[in-house]
Image (cartoon, rainbow, N blue to C red):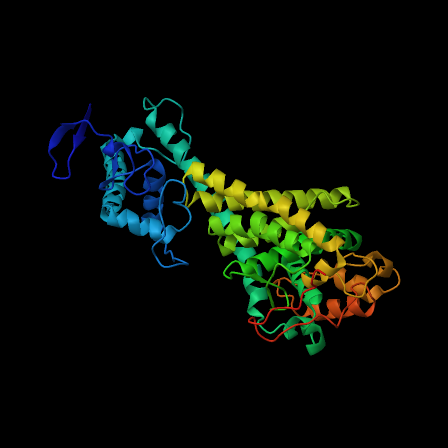
Length: 437
């Protein structure tokens, strides 16, 4: 038998478990918070949303299902449900005011000799509260600094994506109409654009850059294709065509598309992945310290940068989710990376599939996504200089370097080209695919 408090404020005895569950998501509640019975997750979500004045948008019809298993899928609908179920933003403001008032009144009530000071003192104070407060304030300042640094790192990563997406006309990067119709060159160009701007890749030795980009290229290109396909019901290829399957297409194609849908697109759609999270995944794909042949120094630089991105992503998620939800969401995001590499490797090893997804060259007898770029290190000094000069501009605005670098690599056959891949000017026409006979 439970003792419950009704909305009218009267106390009643009832055999009911209604008040034990969150009115927002149905999870087990921990009491009444901000005007409604809520679980710890929804309580924290609502408080952070109001304190930080966060603005959300719904990608669907603003009628998303909010329950224990799907409460993180749409923050807009979750916040609206918090409001609809009785959680009051003014209660949070009142809570902040009370906390601030309590701190001020406590400080005023202390005798002068017990007031906390900026010096360490002689250690004769009778109050244990002052050093405790100093420790708390110091820890809070450190946490604030860490959070701010992580937020800046996430913003810088998102800015890389925004700069490259801002070049809507791909000619600005590729430098020619002929290359614009080349899926593979689009993928390579985008990867080089990221490498130009992502620390510490520009500072790596040339040979290490070649090894790193060669290793990461298929997974990076596939992730970009997945990102572009998220809002669509189909797979959008790098050349802006739509991949439309029928039962008559050959089994390898059907199998790989099924894997892309099941292992990549569906999990990311289920958690309603955000732009910042996809950008962080792209950075993690490129910051791969375990590529065979890298120097020890380069490995350490990449590992340190990768760990920084992981910490920043965790801090970013922690600001908007409860601790438990943060760990689950981060795990779901990181589980995408092994599938990316596995599927990309399968695509790169099959020349027909690789051409369709822009990972291999149509005319290349080998199925590699990039030919051995080290062949042109000593033979073509201009390519080496371009790669070694990547991202040395203080402002990190490096698009002027990209066409030169790309042109040199293509001219020296470090990146081979293909001209016969069918493309369309719009996103409405399907690409021609091989049929199963």
